Image (cartoon, rainbow, N blue to C red; front, side):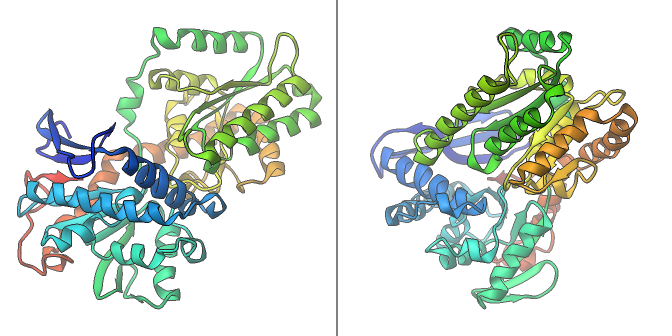
Length: 451
């Protein structure tokens, strides 16, 4: 964004003030402008912690059993999106192209259309999109689906997500799928495509561990010098990530393979997340208990099977930690993409790469075919993959890593951004909001992208 005349608008990250008094606060970011809006405490509780994180997030990740559908949550969700629209609309230029991101803002285009906005508007869903039966667990599922059709483009991560979206339209008889991209429902037509998100490899390669990470990095180097092989998992602590499954599978492996005791150390970075949500507080307590039990059962005075880090680690240190780890572990139950899997691949030494163990529940499994793929929540399969990865010879590791690295390098962040935006600049007469009233400039034109 620094190099483009863009406008970014969203929550400022701050909580305070009274309803109706929130003002847009702007600051420069290179050539772009950042516009932030504070949330009131009630909006934070009901919109962000409530409907976004306690209803939509679990449903999108096929974990509706964790969802809380309190009616006041949805009321606040709609109110906040209406507020964002009212603040954004006066800032728009006639020929702006809007790119809206993630489930927090599904109704935003609908609210903007009500205010007369006719610009081309795209949406990208970073999470998975669930099967129709799971999506229908949301009491307001039909209203949310209708809101999607105020967009000219709806982007999903992988074909599975697109198909689930299209299946809802067909199964619920709210419209019809015209071709492999175009879907019509609620009197509107939208383009639904998949755009797998990638990583910015040059930015990753530029990261260097600093003094604040020196103790951790040195400890891991010491583990290796003592003849221990490192395995690594890096996530926010979230029930969608399958962290207890992977740690329990490690315990199963150590029970089965006594020869691997004191030979393998599993480094699990699990930064705390949404601690004000009861389901997350319970997950944190249960995971800590599991770690302590495994370390107590299989560890020694000088070795703990699991190095559990329940706080954030400076991102600058991650590439070096990835490189030191023979096995990268992703056991997501459901994940939109999972960029850690791609970072792990990109950070490896091609001459002596590690092995990626990857859940089929992660969106990246659609692209990273050469990983050791495992069914989500299958502890026996996870345990078997650990053993295979730890015993894999160098030739096989190189053979797998080559195609993985090529995919990560070519399907990168820049390609994702270009692929997502291209349809929004094409065929302006098809805009849901404009009906051809306002032509949109070609992609090379210097226009603002508002997100």
